[in-house]
Image 1 (spheres, rainbow, N blue to C red):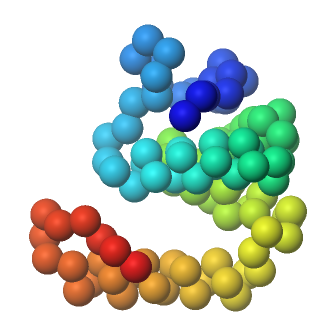
Image 2: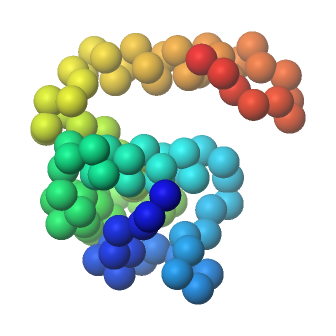
Length: 108
């Protein structure tokens, strides 16, 4: 995957030119945003603006929690999925996580 210009993003942790993730879900959220951008769903400038607004919203969250909230908002704003579809996906994820043994990958 060719990465867009990460310098446009606020506060992203990098090692060299690569993002740093503490947990697998963070890498997955990152990949979703990059894939949606590369598919033409939104420009990288639009994504940077959405993420910056979320990071500077005053809400205390970890960086990739901001990332995920910004992703949900831009997906809804661009009408890529409805609010009910996003809720259904979240619910399905939580149900799958609850039934997945520790240490195994969660599959929907």
